[in-house]
Image (cartoon, rainbow, N blue to C red):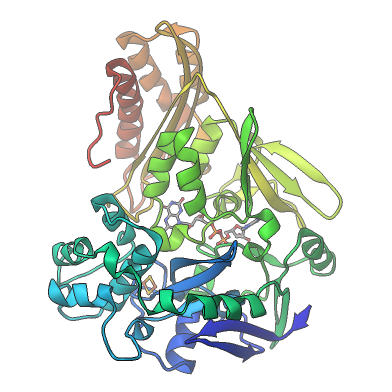
Length: 479
Ligand SMILES: Cc1cc2nc3c(=O)[nH]c(=O)nc-3n(C[C@H](O)[C@H](O)[C@H](O)COP(=O)(O)OP(=O)(O)OC[C@H]3O[C@@H](n4cnc5c(N)ncnc54)[C@H](O)[C@@H]3O)c2cc1C
Ligand code: FES
Ligand code: FES
């Protein structure tokens, strides 16, 4: 292992940062050390997109571009990647990048504070897709807020982008960038800085070695939950193990019983993979944070955080998912149903980590999931519901139903399941099942929703699910 340094590619050179502060945000580094102030700080919690930058990562000898929120990214995680800032989009000859030119042409900027963030989100879209359809455009900018221009000029700018412009200066310089990335890739990192430690192992065996010697250390995957304790609560994280550097844990595979998702797989990859098996899973993931969040955030992080409003959790509970836990010696497989103990408490022990998640395949079942939040995109759920139903000739053979936002933990609706199981789908049974939710849950009132609203929504989502099944079509607004 190399101690102390990180290396990344910036402006066609390898940059070395010696002994960085392990809690320093990438945004702070960009603005105060690189002295590039195009990238802005708005919220410091991943919600406004003003700090969006793009990272280039080598995958199968190709560069994959990802928009991320630099305000909640820690500098050491830049190891082995290419950093692209808004200042870098202009060519050497001084011509604007097609994305920037489109924003000018369509008057996509007024005060300009949000503009660099929008430009970087659209740049990432430009590099990732070959066609810029309406849904791709809208999804690409869900993580960016604009308070004065409004979104229509920005959407029009994005629509005007043409494939023929795709050969930009990054494409022309691709070979050189790949060579530079190859030089600095594949290194495990250890940093000790002013009493703080940071480890980025490449392999599970290295991770175990680190865990053996460092009992009180935090796993850091996408960091989209954990980093906020630094940026918002102003705490220090004294010891970090960066899990997303372990490519061995970045995979999705399937057998005839389940889909297995490795712990460091970003949600954006699951989003497209799982569509074929559970289209509603993809629909929920599309509304999960923003592309900047999903480009790095993991399902393992969502599970370990154990928030009652974690969006994957009711879906996984209704699908009877299992978590594969690993410690120094053993692998243990636990039903997610038995994993959550109390508010944000789980059965994870010291030196134990989530290795993967197994999502069973129910080919003959109907799976439906709904998220209700104040804002459609990039917002936390007030209520999230998931229904996994086996219905044969109008009879419910089995029902697994789970809700988020209705209790201190994401939880199954056991009484409701009992009412539905072995029953015919009738209005009477559905009404009885709705009523039984009052036995299952005693939700709270908080800033997101009142107790009464939550219960009403939970009941209505159940009814909606059966109406959709009966009418064999989706009655959904905006999806
Ligand atoms: C702007 C914004 C929007 C968001 N929107 C949503 C949303 O719509 N829905 C939603 O559910 N969540 C949302 N979140 C919360 C967050 O993105 C998710 O919970 C995410 O899945 C966390 O994953 P991560 O990889 O970033 O976790 P991290 O922040 O890296 O870690 C979270 C916790 O899990 C632990 N951990 C991480 N990996 C492992 C592992 N392999 N083994 C054991 N423990 C581990 C960490 O130690 C930490 O305690 C949002 C967050 C932000 C900032
Ligand atoms: S500053 Fe708002 S998302 Fe980073
Ligand atoms: S141009 Fe002012 S906030 Fe978007």
